[in-house]
Length: 186
Image (tube, rainbow, N blue to C red; front, side, top):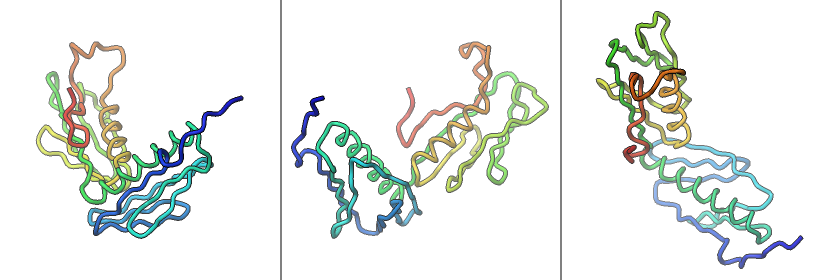
């Protein structure tokens, strides 16, 4: 089998570490900043992550297409971690209730949705650790320095109000994501 080799300079990625951000590389990559701490396990047999001065270097072990994919993925993850500890990722959800008035509240590590379509038993969505959820009128705000945790918490809240077997065009009640990390959903 023929493996296409890629030049080394095209695969090597260097990420600048901004002021006020500390990065520790070990079994997990730990990024500390003014907004919190994010840690992620990034291990691959195709790539190596090193810290040199004020830069993070991601280098391939062999110069193949698979190594290129892994390096670009690691690059995106580390940039999101650095961005998250500087300014949080914010997801916004809208509470829509036309049939029955819905009560949404935050209790410890879960979001409790009461009176959804007149149901007696409240629906519960899990809040992942390191994520803050705030209910402001008919808007639910999810905030976290970790993009994946903020997105998963927002998805948990949206899925808690999902109804199978009903046409979404007619039965629009629920909690819907309207903004992902500062970008409005169309």
